[in-house]
Length: 207
Ligand SMILES: Nc1ncnc2c1ncn2[C@@H]1O[C@H](COP(=O)(O)OP(=O)(O)OP(=O)(O)O)[C@@H](O)[C@H]1O
Image 1 (cartoon, rainbow, N blue to C red):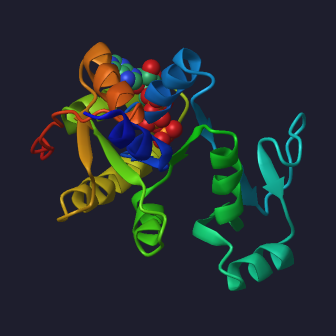
Image 2: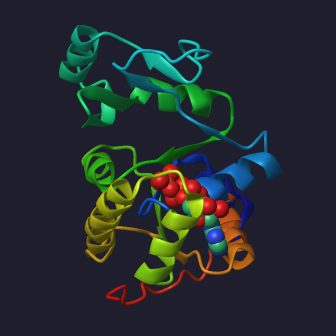
């Protein structure tokens, strides 16, 4: 691949999506650790209150519901969502802020957000991280031990929605199955660096 192609591909944002518990955070954390000067998350806006230790503009841009709504009406967000009465959104400005530092912006969002991004002129690269099977996803959610059984069941139900979206024509540029972590990370790193890879094929995930 020519240098110019690599540069162009690796400067557009990278959207990473996939069911909760599949290992997106694990892969992204490792990428940030390996390449601290190359990648960054954009800072999202939220209407939720800051938690102790959080700084405005660092973890989030903390705004009121009214400010959020007016930003929304000005089309300031490329995607937004509501979770338990709070709004969250990724602004065009936040993505530009990452771009201006010379880093590649990474977006870790749900398929609902991916659909919204598709309606913008951002044109990122879309990577779907897939579990090797639903049984493995279930095991990982239990193994992480951060959720109640009820929350795990909810995440599994949402996983079905994420996976069925990934099956839609043109939903993603790359599928990476996170079975063996080293193999998955090596593919993920290549995509993030703008290299062409042979993506995986979605497994049946009907177990
Ligand atoms: N390839 C792998 N093999 C085994 N375990 C893994 C692998 N990848 C990740 N895990 C483990 O699976 C669990 C879920 O991973 P992680 O929290 O990164 O998922 P996630 O997709 O970021 O979830 P969420 O969207 O809920 O934040 C963690 O305990 C992690 O250590």
